[in-house]
Image (tube, rainbow over the protein chains, first blue to last red):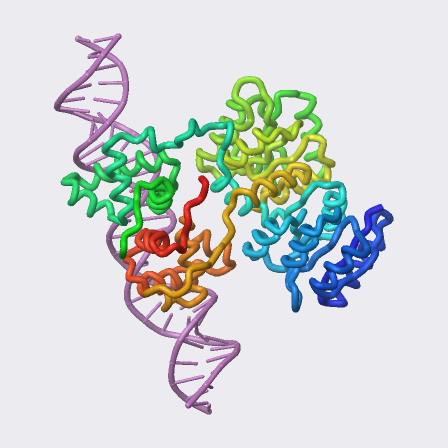
Length: 222
Length: 222
DNA sequence: GGGCGCGTAGTACCGCGGTACTACGCGCCC
DNA sequence: GGGCGCGTAGTACCGCGGTACTACGCGCCC
């Protein structure tokens, strides 16, 4: 039996969730809360297995409430429900320690499966949000154990390529680099292309970021 | 109708998937492959909507096959199936560009829902794997911190424009910013254009440099 | 009530950026 | 002497980025 606390500022929405959860035997709604502060208080008091948390609420919102609930150290897990798939919310909620994110328009079975998974200690994310999460994950999370022999790229650059990267880091266009280095633009493109491939950058913008992150470019006084 | 290519080295396993997918009207199995190389070839030939990809196979494994399929630029999406929830596989598969990961012991409805989501362009992850993914994500992905008060040029930006500049500083394309901020690409272009004009940048590359020089962007661990 | 700033959104257009090739001279070294 | 890394250069092609507009709803304030 999974105990659930429903948190939403709209009574009708709470009622709907309540009805749904009452319709199956494995969940038991132990309480409701209309805003963040009440959610934090009732979680401490009722110790539900799962807190079904709306994000947008007057006063303390769902993210801050999640943060406090997780920080309090209880074993209640939080399943966040968002109407909009605004990333700021998702990021903030992940950081706050939520166990899942589903969109409010999820089908009933999805919601129930989500609650089941969260109660079990797993986590769930709505498919529509997962796509972007994976993209971002792939970009930021270092690929330990797989590749990266300590210096992904930089060491494999030739002297010329490093010069080119520095020039790119200054914000110069291919044409400007060609003029300053006395090369054809084709040659510059060839070099830039190789640099991008070696450092794993999608375009010169990410190369600029790479240059800054690796100390190849340094802030000017503007 | 979603067309599916089944990739698994075990004939019995393929047979099981085939039966399952044939049992519902919305999926159509257009082929099978017994190893990675065959999967790559048949994907190019049959152009299925979804490739159901086993990880562990003799010869070219599912990860490498996924990498090649995604790199080839077709519109086939890959749903990876793992028997074990080994992290190395998950990481590698995310980096390879897979649209989803499910455990082989998933319930039939989960698998079908997964295929549906992936075909639709979304992504899915088995709840048991999501937990760890979120933890790692929260550890590595930097939070959107908007700091740094008054600054020449910077002060004339509206809040929205400053948000856009920060996003540009992360190396995001206009399309990515539009998706993450839930805006049209036109709107993003309008914002970016105004930002460039206000800070006196020629293009977004100089805007990235500006962001770094003014502390709006900060190096990540990479 | 009208003006204004802001955020949103669209159309049209063009050029730079990036990819995918091929090519070749030069110097080095097995 | 042939292979190889490197720097140079070209062609072809396409898409994203950026510009130049217009437009409109909303909230604020004179």
